[in-house]
Amino acid sequence: MPIELRPARLNDADTLYQLICELKQTTFDRDAFLSGLARNLDDPQRFYQLALQDNHPVGMISLQMQFHLHHVRWIGEVQELVVMPESRGYNTGQRLLAWAESKAREWDAELLELSCGALRKDAHRFYLREGYEPTHMRFTKRL
Image (cartoon, rainbow, N blue to C red; front, side):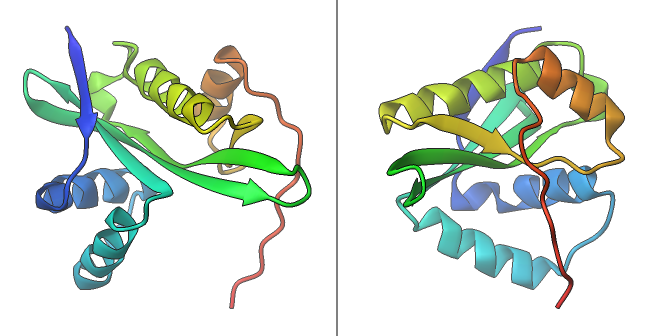
């Protein structure tokens, strides 16, 4: 099935909300989500791309561009990538990653990075297959 990619807009908020809830397997505060999405869409260094199959949203990726002082270069960070389970196996994730890589190259980025939950073994295999390398450990502290 052909996959179409297009930028996400504020009127896609319901779709993005559903996709993010699928990604994290939870239900988030909808008002907080919508408020944050509106702010992020106004940020010229953040990008959201939707994947559509027969005009039906089946996935999304978010990309943030940051100038890292310790690289003295732009770095792209994929913050979210999700493909609905019924649409996996159609290269949707590959297409979304390729879009993010292309966008990061437009910024002359040194690299594209992403984080993935330690227990998401299928996602780890996907990222490794796509040429991503586990180079860092991420430490977090709940506040």
